[in-house]
Length: 70
Image (cartoon, rainbow, N blue to C red):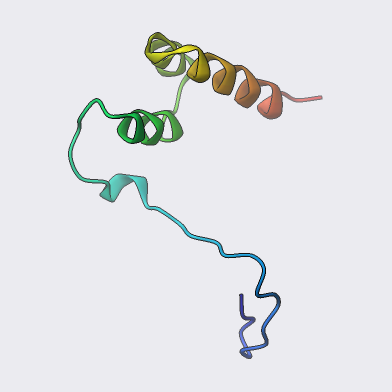
């Protein structure tokens, strides 16, 4: 990572970003399911993703926990 003046912060971490709106195609692969999960906006959609497996239920529960006001 570099700051605006090109100073190297670290060579240990690499950060990649993905613009979900530009992901092509709609298939039923594991990757496509995760991309849809990450792009979800409401709780009903999150609940629908849980039919694809327990991992999405766990991820949705954790997301709800992290998003909760304390």
